[in-house]
Amino acid sequence: MADPNEIIEKLGEQLSVIGTEAPYKTGIGQTIYLYDYQREGFDLPSIAIGTRNFQLDRTDENRGGQRLSTRARGMDLIIEAAIKGAPEDAQRLAIDMLSDIERALVVKTGAAPLGTFGIRFNTAQILERPAGVDATVLQIIGSADYQVRT
Image (cartoon, rainbow, N blue to C red):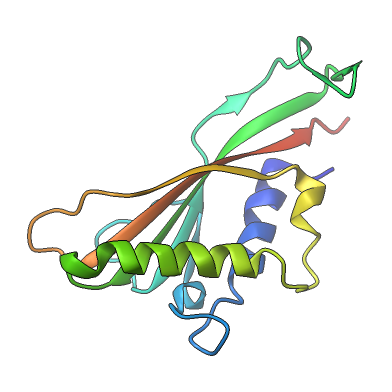
């Protein structure tokens, strides 16, 4: 099983296939920022991948009737995709970015299959944009499982 750094790096590798050629629409995979969040000064379009929280004790959980190992861990995944666009286009652009990300997750790239990392995406939302900013940012919150290596 992968460690947190490997999960973030492999996810970045997987999402880097998103270009502007069909079947993709947005080109957000052209620039990937690892261990970060979207912020001023980043190239657009782009994707930033980071984490914020870790779950260290999961011994009270079970899968398929089996308790999890004392080595089982969990982590948040935060993916923020950004693209230039007018406020009136924000919802359409967010849907296009989400569609591109979901499509890229099933492409065979040579990166380990994301299912191996126990990655789940839970929610997606369009972030508020400061006045005058001409970019749409889609934030996806998810989680991934990993085990402490001994």
